[in-house]
Amino acid sequence: MRAFEDLTLLRSFVSIVECGSISAGARRLRISQPTLSRQLRTLEELCGTALLRRDTHQMSMTETGQRLLADAQALLDHAEAAGRRLHADHTTLSGQLHLFATMDLGQWIVTPLVSRFLQANPKITATLALNNRPLHMIQEGCDVGIVPGRITDESVIARPVGVIRLHLAASPALVKNRPEVKRLSDLQSWPWISLSGSHFWGGTDVTLYDSKGGSHTLPTTPVLISEGVTSIREAVRDGLGVALLPDWLVENDLKSGAIVPVLPRLRAKDLPLHVVYAGQRILPARVSAFIDFAVRYLADAGSNSSFKGNG
Image 1: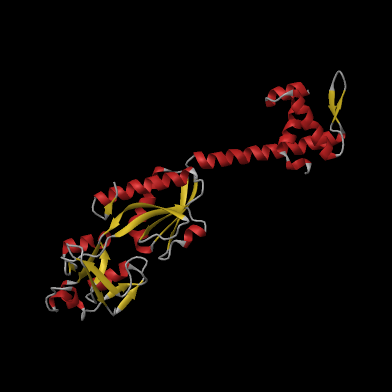
Image 2: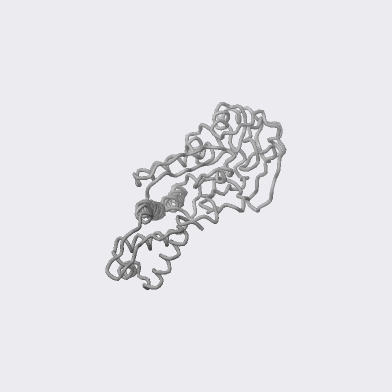
């Protein structure tokens, strides 16, 4: 071991010099005088030379001790400053957050959430990444994500914050020009629009449930597959086809009649919504504060019918 590898030994040496004696240095450090003497001897052995000259009346530094003192004081100052920064990181609401969400949810729901949080905490800044394959973002160093769908990654903590209801919907013109729909199989010949992938509710097979819990599945051949639900909604509005769409996106369209429900007696399974973050990690104060804020915000949003929130 080298002299600069043990801050305790350096702190002991600096205390002796600044206090003027081993006894005074021991009182400052709240250790016994023999313990401090042993630490000084250990440091001198590591340096290979004496650092202090001792006699019955006074103590003075050797030339090596003088050179070591300045370096030791600077090193201890840096260590204390680093400690203060670490403490502030875990106790004060400041610094940068790295957030992520799926594309459309991020634009419509998460961006207003982040805006409210940053306005309430002006010393915090944030980056928001929008990606429809989001869970790898934790491995890439992001702090928190807001993600719909099943969470199968055991390395993350997923706090459920509500569910998103899905509506089977089409444009009024498309419904008017088609035969009446009484069962899911009647939609076999309809043009379908699907969300790509199966992490959320994508895929070509559509499964709906009746009031008794019975499932009804229809294989489809989509005329359009898109990664974004906003683009799917626009295609539905334009009369291209029928699709499953989240309530937070189409609530106003359904109220205004811009799109209409199809086969409303059947429902798709609700989609769970989670706040996710890395497990087995001590969280900085800003991250913990954002997680708590997001859970409350989404619960309130759910109570206002954008989706069904927890709480």
